[in-house]
Image (cartoon, rainbow, N blue to C red; front, top):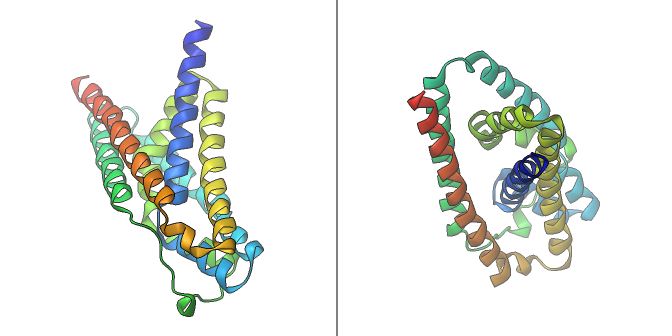
Length: 212
């Protein structure tokens, strides 16, 4: 029994890490701010923007959990959400595989702050889509196993999310050309394939809910 629990917890730890790494490396409004702040100012400015999800995500997560708790008795709705999550993960996988690098024009970089990073993340639809269709259901599933499983899922997600963006800050401070090199592109393609595979788990869950 202990082995089963450990393996299940490891599964959610891995899921949190992969989703966090993918979110941390994928181009988007927040990553653009991270890069532009680093180029315009310094590493510290880029890191301030990189940690903004720690501020913005809590109300989004609580809102998503409230929705999930309200509809938790409706298997059909949960099935639809699972399929929506599968589609969203599949879309993220497709977009991740297509990435050929990141390019930010120095002349277009504008002075930003942690406050601007928070605003940019609040206005970005991806966190809402992720937590409503993927993150919140996984938090509840992990909590159903144990509190430590849920905590490890969240810790892995944010360690990889913030860690990936801080790593990019360090790379950009050395050379922005590194973001277009083969290693970065290859990493993103591997992540894209993994996301496609994870989407199959959500399809399975959706079928299970609808079957019930």
